[in-house]
Length: 410
Ligand code: SF4
Image 1 (cartoon, rainbow, N blue to C red):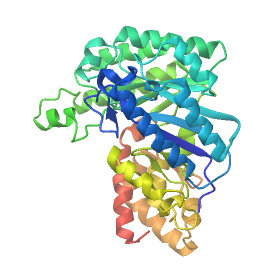
Image 2 (image 1 turned 180 degrees about the vertical axis):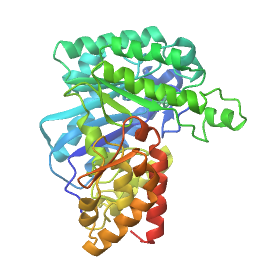
Image 3 (image 1 turned 135 degrees about the vertical axis):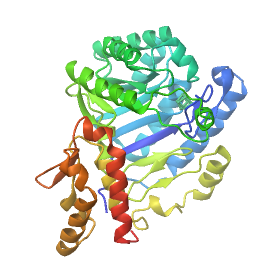
């Protein structure tokens, strides 16, 4: 059993429209998203009522040290709506002194004054969904904002950070987008560093089948960088950002000293967390549970929960521990990797099982260990940076094959 959760994720599913690569659980509202009396506002109110209800009927737990408002686009809500959600969460769990409270915001959905409102209600870390600076790229991935709106948003956030109103902030970019090559990507990185964001999340584009990009890719006409170019782009990200003083504490996360996200680190450490909202995943006691991804399904589920909690994974008595393969999958994303023996003992393996199974896993990982892609030091296994991190999927596939070969049912 994991220690009681001290983190919570709140899902705000609203967006203006669906970006071409996105398969998140969202509700596109079109341009009516923020207009008074519009259908968008009605949907928001109905959803917030469900979200409050879900928080209220959740089991209790210790005070939270990290809270993350993600989406979707939380900045489509106003400070009163967001403040009420935080108050409800605080009534339920309490917040530790100095809790990290992050909110995702998208350019073109807020102005400087809105940011001040978010800070007033307790937000102390902003995660800005920039994705790209180039106007043609932004249009080609279906984003609503343009370059000048992104630059303006970065300036507003950074000003508040430098004046001490925010503890930190992060900018998201996606590498390997269609039409991108190494020289264009270097320009993106340069602009990201100019914003002075102390934390950068650099995601690889993943092509999800049920998206616009998924359909174009199936026809073979999505112009994404070929593998060798994608590798160069990834190496350059690593080299460039390290030269600028960033450290890579997780496959997709770079931070200046003192700016690693506590919420992210909690998640990758395998600790438990509460999750609330449509499509949100939680794992308060180990076992993961994902809520229905449609509003109708989520409504039905919340109504079923009522005040008497029925979902096994949300109760400390009924939930099962997180399986070891899942713990390894998330732990290997971190710079420090995983201590295999300690984790295996924690899930209850005997010394004999530990010896036998770890030796067997090392056979699956032999190529990566022998070629310096996966490193082993004092019982800790971690991916080398950048070569190992670049092929993390291959290492994970071998780990899952090993897991299947054990034939365990937990
Ligand atoms: S803004 Fe974010 S969550 Fe919304 S559709 Fe685009 S990528 Fe998905």
